[in-house]
Length: 125
Image 1 (cartoon, rainbow, N blue to C red):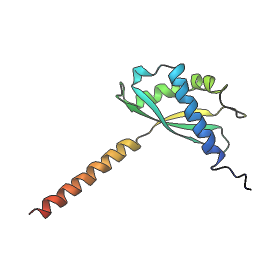
Image 2 (cartoon, helix red, strand yellow; image 1 turned 60 degrees about the vertical axis):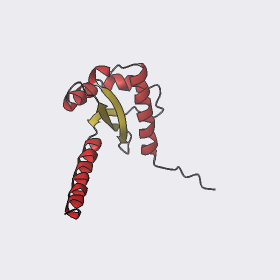
Image 3 (tube, helix red, strand yellow; image 1 turned 90 degrees about the vertical axis):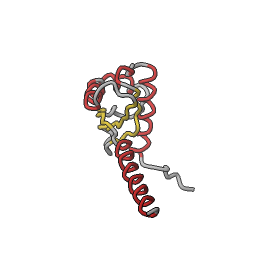
Image 4 (cartoon, helix red, strand yellow; image 1 turned 30 degrees about the horizontal axis):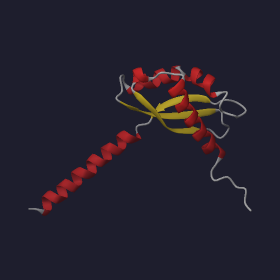
């Protein structure tokens, strides 16, 4: 019987960090003045020292750069709440990055819709 884990340790720790950060925002740190922030993905370096936390924002109250700067300014506070919950040798440094994948997806969808509309227009002529 194989005892192999379903995915890499960095993936498991990243998923755990993502869950804990969401709980921290829910219970301890109010970010509502920035908009509705969700953490979409966490990439951790193989040595588990640095975690790149990707976030998205619905109804942003500030620019994405300002929100990113504010979150990075709160990284020590996040680490303080993260430490008792995350059971690893050292708590990773948190670097927050805006996740623009949704914006890129919307842009591609608009292009595809435009192409389909042009195809439909040319077929009806």
